Image 1 (cartoon, helix red, strand yellow):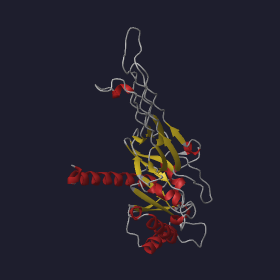
Image 2 (cartoon, one colour):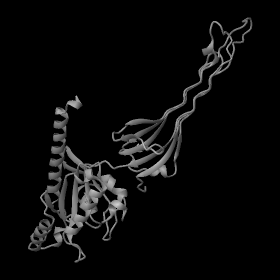
Image 3 (cartoon, helix red, strand yellow):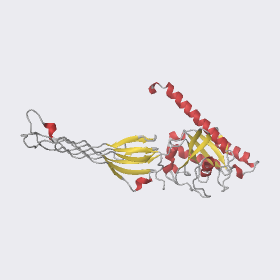
Image 4 (tube, helix red, strand yellow):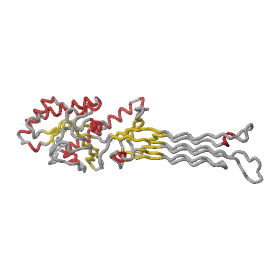
Length: 351
């Protein structure tokens, strides 16, 4: 199924049923009085987070969703049946905005999370409701109210603990294949990854984290170059970024340090919050350099970047260094969780 991470849909809640104008008519019952029932309420439209979905592709064709309307009331004080609510299933990580107002309606991040996005109309009142001591035969009813109609913009941001970023052909797809059961498309030309791939990296029997392989970035990505801004947003939910760099590029004119700086600049341009996330440097393709050349190339890279953060050396192709990287990532994620819990515990606003 083709990956789709944005869609616009129209949702319409059901209209309320009209109230009934009716009078009791039975043999031997004179002036039986009003007995018109109320109309039923219209069904509402809900968005429901479904963990089995991973794309908004279903909304490429189906763009209109309408809940059932309420039925009108009838004689003998019978209330019309209310319309059924409509549940629209969306992937985890879907952010919903109102197209007309720009309002953020919800962010569906928990399995089964359910959010009403269009309220059903109220049922009208039958003439029985208007009976009084001075008006014993009312001919007044009210119509049901129309259901709410909205244009919604759905935006999917993948849910992952760790995001891989780097230039095209840096080896991100190969790395996620080596560390998880994910099997993205891999080839020796740029932009083989056209949509985010998720893989579960298992570190221990009860320890694992989710890694996202984001399509390769190039300079100008924050302004739409290459696959651009379309996929930068998928890094926003991650807690740790692994910045892959090819230590042995095929093109001799390419400087690995320049590629790292270019992507770091794009992160800043796209989002200051994203640029401030913890980012580790992962030197990839170490198997392509000799034992003598690797330390020289690594030291030159770190000196040029003036890098002070964590550095890992791996070969995604052979798997060398990937186990150590996975262990370190798991420890870092646990530390982030502990720090978040400590802040929440001592935050007066959370109590």
